[in-house]
Length: 403
Image (cartoon, rainbow, N blue to C red):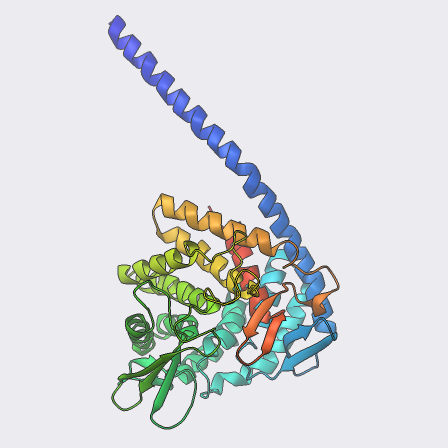
């Protein structure tokens, strides 16, 4: 009997020690999370102030594109520009966190300008344009008409699918060419949604086929991706593998790697097919273990840029990566989960501070500085970009929602 009680007491002591250790570890990690959450809450408040600056400078029927700090001049776009959905999407994310009715009013106004793009069949970017805007609106501030707007948007996007190639065409070009960019992975979420609400599996099948073709042809053995694949429109064969916005055809353009990471995380979420999870994990490994990834986790504009470490950083790539990693962290084992969250935290922390986060009233009202659009064409270089703000806000929202 004495031996029984001795064993029982020892067992209780071991359990108490384990509980104490776990509590100590939790208390050690908690202050860091609490501090970052405090920073994030302040970021959303600051974003509200910034976007009111942006609103006050925005022409009635235009969308913000970028701002040039050296000259104090803006560049705006029409609703047909691929980035048009990010401004309303950002307004919605900020409104959701701050409940500032002025931001919701502006979102509703600009959605009215954007709505006509549901009939646009000249672009592959309807996911960016319509799902980042109306797709968020249906969840954050819903209206009955949003469903039909999004279904029509999905129909328009589906017209660009070529079953012989197995992809949605990205850019129109000369006859015989069929250009597909890695960015196009970001537009598939709209198609998955359309199948859910209509029951029409056509959209789902297009998304899966596009993702499978892209996985086969866009990626190198190290899981870095090409930016552009030129298919033969008639045979579906690969004619060319190249870049447009990266340093070189064989280089790893940073934002392209981020699009791939995010896109395959979404593919796994929507299909639960493990091949997409493995693809996303392998892309994440390429990004996070790359010897040219800086310590602050804001990547150079191209992982193979020739002038590293003085090459420009691309804060927009870090925003997309952070958001993608936080989603991916929910699908993996505990070790990878911790690793992905730790890296996303580092990215959010860096973007929350100088030199990346703009001071209130500066940067034309954009939240994030130092992004790179298209160095080969010398456009949107080292400036704010709407999608950097959007995915930064999304990453912070996702971090707040972590269990």
